[in-house]
Image 1: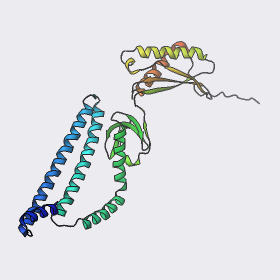
Image 2 (image 1 turned 90 degrees about the vertical axis):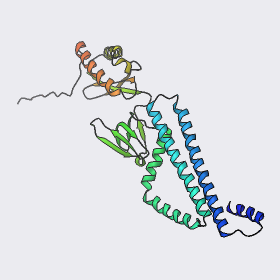
Image 3 (image 1 turned 45 degrees about the vertical axis):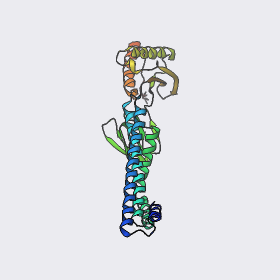
Image 4 (image 1 turned 90 degrees about the horizontal axis):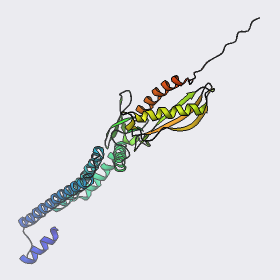
Length: 289
């Protein structure tokens, strides 16, 4: 740009430009570059705000909005860094500073920083992918990095969990290889029901279904249940019991509530119907002389 302006002025004047004119040309070019950078920053910010508004205007999920806002913040940061870096290089070139040594130094420094901050870069990259793919949301019950609990916060750096005992775990995104989400769309409350070998299975299944139906009819717990109780059948023959496996489809993250309520009511129903809940026992024989 500088050479073109100088050639046009030389063509008009017919002689070499004086020093003050060259300085004025360089200053004009710097101002134009900074103005163009400011316009690009303003345009990119406005474009991202418009995109964010269109994505979230029909979405009532607060956590989904928070995820989109986080992603837009990342894109805004990337756009700002790229535009600023290009503008700085152009300004340095206009005022006569060679940017080749600066780029070489920055490359070496970036390589050194990259080796020293591999885990940090990995954390941010993994966090960006997790947010982009919507793998984890606040309120989900997940298992990540060997820890499990309820998600309280998701950032580009870490996932914050709180377990049943109230302990808070900060899991860096870089160590997350597998995400086990136990509350996406729906959950299953699993029950292992132990009965004595002498109990008729058909009768036990009737009691289990009646308890499941009473739970669905409950004004408080019923809305949390999506489908009637499903009896999967005999799961195993244990030493002192026959174990039936059952499950109930419930709303996300409510499997623990339904499981505890179901087992409590099932114990009462078994007592009323005289169904044995076995426990390990031992028979001792004494031999006389």
